[in-house]
Image 1: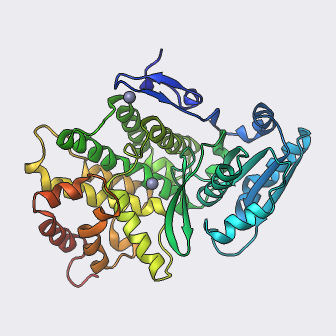
Image 2: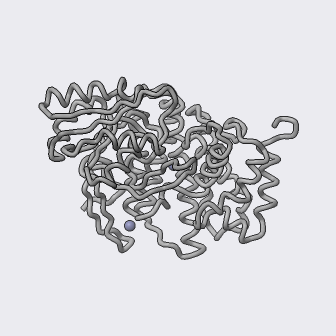
Image 3: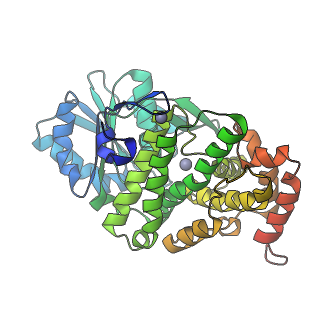
Length: 393
Ligand SMILES: [Zn+2]
Ligand SMILES: [Zn+2]
């Protein structure tokens, strides 16, 4: 049997892998396709999944990007379908209104839900699928976040960010000739979400060394390899080069797959995600818009890597530091935000997030490590001075 690091992304579909870590890793997704032009394969995939009637969910933008063509293909393939197009002006959010409207148009005879979109539409379809038992698949329209292959639904309920359990998509269909035309902030957000894995993986390793937490060498190596490939394609992404978009898309899907393999989000999420979450919750509290998740995560990775540098002398012997300069230069090359001021984060919020982001969840990261050493306050002051030079905030 091939090792995880030797497998192509598409080979992960339906995998059961007895791993060197002692566990058997499994993937409940039946089909993964990432290629230019692969939207044309939609009818065949829908038939393999048991056929229609299919219920398509799209918004104005994703309908134009892929939904209209998806409908034509289903029609030509003789697959019955109907659709819901969210046509509001504002960006769609996965809140009570969106979930309710999506549910209201689901028909009793529907056999498959097809999300045509990225974050919100995928999360909406996943939630609907998990609660109704109707399977779902996703046609990806932007390489903007790593939730395609995830099993949880991040929702906004009563103005609060909450995560509800969901299910795997049965299939992921990512046509890179469509995805490369997504709005640029979505491309840079997906890239930032991937660059955040540099520090997520460091946090996971640190917790293994300090606390003996379960760690899978093969899954970590798998993720690290995908992140490396993205880092090498930063400039291509900025130019909307389809090959670079493919590399980032594969890494984003793989990130969800890796979380499924391990059974938690360790391969994909550490302190950099806690910063992003902290800033997002603050913006929600004040009813303000906030940057896309992945753009905050990229900045979070710069901060987290800076903390690792400051902690260097206290870290376990031989610990491989995440490379802060590399993280910075990758983000800059891709055109992603690389500092908190670029995201519009106020200095006081930045300082507060350094001290309290770790309280978001019970997970050991560089933040808890520094707090345990009594160094977190000092590091927070140091970084606030560095990222907000006097007179510039
Ligand atoms: Zn393993
Ligand atoms: Zn993320």
